Length: 187
Image (cartoon, rainbow, N blue to C red; front, side, top):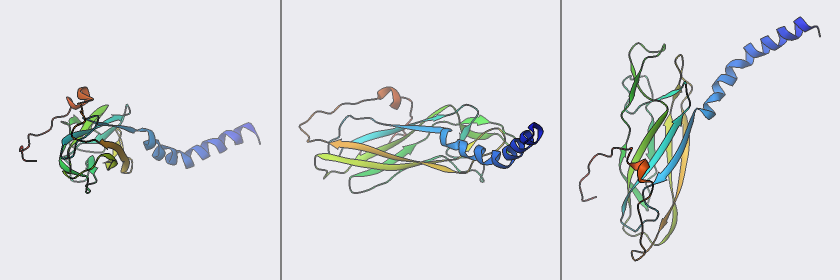
């Protein structure tokens, strides 16, 4: 094959397949790390869960709530079961951004964002380990377009110990970055 024909073939292949490469970039756009506020739990105890989102440079995700009815908000959902229930979720204050695909400024998260959930362990839990399952739903965008919506699955092991065993607060530097609304003390 001649050199000009080879270059033309490569350019044509890049044009045909370039968009599929663009759409698969999302795998690396948002990373999540999960933290619990206690090293171990007692039955009936209220505790916090934090998700640290790292969003790659040049990208953002929609805030919660969104200020445009056509955008999908970032959503933290925790599966309730016979071991744990969700008392409330907390989302960070959004940043404002102006983008080619929208007329108005949009509420977004960029760089790093901390989502939180206040959880309550059920009163009848026996010592042992269980998993908290959840999802982060989000849509990543850059200045010109948005990728399809995506989800990150969360599975967090939790150890329940007897009331006589001491537990302690952990990762407080992470939880200090999340503003949980005040709740009634009769959780």
